[in-house]
Amino acid sequence: MLKTLLLYVLLLAAPVQAAPADADASRAGAKPGAPQQQMSLVYDLFRNGHKLGQVTDTFNRSGKDYTLVSETRASGPLKALWPGVIRLESRGSVTPQGLRPARFEHARSDAPHKRATAQFDWAQRRIAYTYKGQAWTVADLQDGAQDQLSQLYQFMFAPAVRTDLALQVVSGRDLNDYRYASADGGTLDTPLGPLATRQYQRVGQKPDEKSITVWIAPARGNLPVQVRVVEDGVVLEQRLVRAQLKG
Image (cartoon, rainbow, N blue to C red):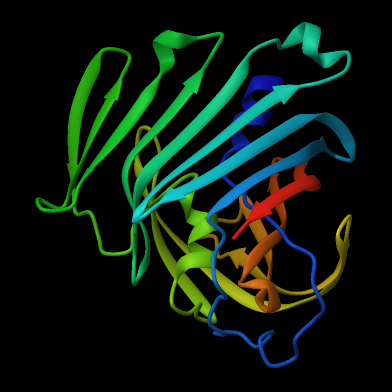
């Protein structure tokens, strides 16, 4: 059960930075500020208010190329039950339209045979998957598609963020079309200070679908400051505890 919950959370991960609010920049559709070149972020991970572990994200950019890595570990008494690491990695390029993934990998240190990869073939508009020794291809890759890890960092790099967001998301084994509706997210208290936010919530097609909500801070370049996933009565949340940012 713990491993499944941790996998849910890895759908979403992103950085935050403290700064004074900017009324003009907080409007929906505001352009993001200058993105960071390097980031190291640590989040506490909670299930229904109880701490499960930590998520550590790193972002590095060299010229037009970027690398994103996210690692989740259990902590405290749960570490004995789940000593492994869940690792996501996204590699690609930074374009005028934002991040353009080239390769995505999802791996677990306790189950190396379950490593899943997705290779983006933008010229042929398709994705090449590998998982458990099997390989297959899926067509219909669309402009602006993101992977599980890059999708939230795209808020930072897109030239503008629309009020309602449609996004094609590639995981290690499938391809999904998500829609998000935006609303005023209010001011959230964070370890780095209060931040005015916009809220993006996934619009589900079925009553029992997983709910995903992201709060971003437009005044700080559309950096996500809170992430919440709700499914089957379970609430998973990531809360930032440390951040090192380099422009």
